[in-house]
Image (tube, rainbow, N blue to C red; front, top):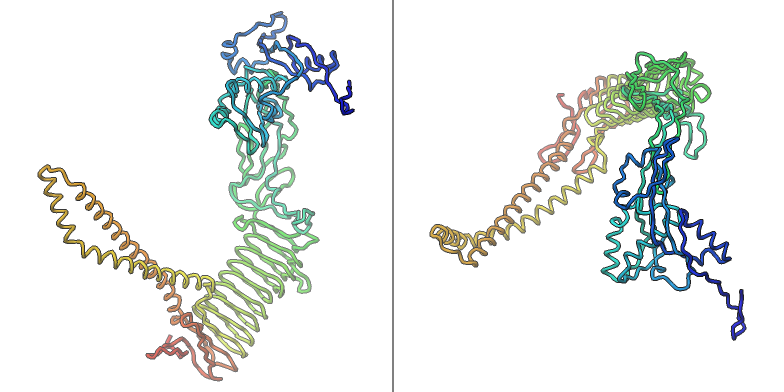
Length: 633
């Protein structure tokens, strides 16, 4: 209803009720009923909890057993077996006094709510950031009472599952009591009741782990048909397939006292396949594991899973197989049969990763091959990249990386490896520790850290470079130089500090020796040592420890510098052992270059046409000048 004030404004008033005492097992329902009966908003009503009775019975069919009230001690004595017994029932009846809210509550400044997990086996109290708690004499009792009221509005039991409640926010109550006024800077959450969480039923499941290797999605989440997983590799003992056995869950009981019965498991994926001798089957209580008994790739033919090692395909292309990605340590070998020189055995843009591959034809544009061992009987396109520890190529125009690389004909391609052996080279770039070329044509730039050996020269305009940095990056060299400079500065600073300590030590040694004699005399004669003497001796001990620490630090830094310098020197010294060997006469224009590290200079030499300078190496004369000379070996 509305009344007019003196100012003519309408003031809304809410009717109030006379307090009502009721007994109920559902507080929220009772408040709603009073709201409807007395035509007042439900949010204008509150209640006091006057008392709670807990009842139990065992619902054995036909027993007719009545509900029995439990004392508070009997409630505390209930065991887990009682709660997890499906025939055990619980209920509570609460005596409450319902009244209209007419004045503010001292806990109004705390904005808090009750919530639970999906099963209501865990109930949490959440206090929002910005809430303020003001301590007063009965704060704790009122706070717990308010929480219980919120639990009752949510139809949760009280006094049964809430043994964790007070201890969980005990620290909070202590802070409020000490500070008087406590502000919640962030949201805080506390566990206030905990029932018995059921264990979920597990339905059976068949997981094809090996299928997860199919890379059929691109970076934008679209299907990439070029990577559709033609071969699924596996290493020994790898989990390929897993059958999760169905298992019925376990009973639970939530904080409303409701018994939770798990669902019956659904079984529909029991294995119907069999396995070959290279699949290991491990049967456990929870699952059946199918693991690779050997390295290779997974096959499924005629309902039988097995592991095989050899794959034979006509070509690897977008149309036939898509890219193939297997683990390098899986024992998979691929033989690509396409030999037609007008076609590509490895198609444009295809990527192949495999332990071993034999390509009888060509590697096409933008293709990438990665293997432990690879053979290409055709040619490698100029935009193709091939990597393998052991690599053999017939005609190479692309980019190759490896450890031991053999090329029949290099045609303007590039090679980086530990050792490179080439039958005929016409144009291209080579970087390796050791390079051997049977027939050297023109326009080849080669750099080795240890040896370059040429059997026959038929061309010119080649560069033969000895570079000790082949196996070292400029970044590593600069980093080591910086470290040497830092260590050298540290040695200088430590020496300066140590010199001062040692000077002080020498000056004070007579006094310290005299002090030690006096202290020894006092101790031998049972005389109490003067405190000043003891303090001086302790200072002497600390000084000696500092001196020893500086000496040890200096030795450590000097050892570190020696190690860095030795590594630096060894790298430079290696260039004097390196050789360029030509078993033929030198023909046309060919440049010989030795790249020094310290000083950072290049030493050039051009052998005379038709000369027989078989072995060339770097020489340093007495004046320190460097030159390239003919060596005995």
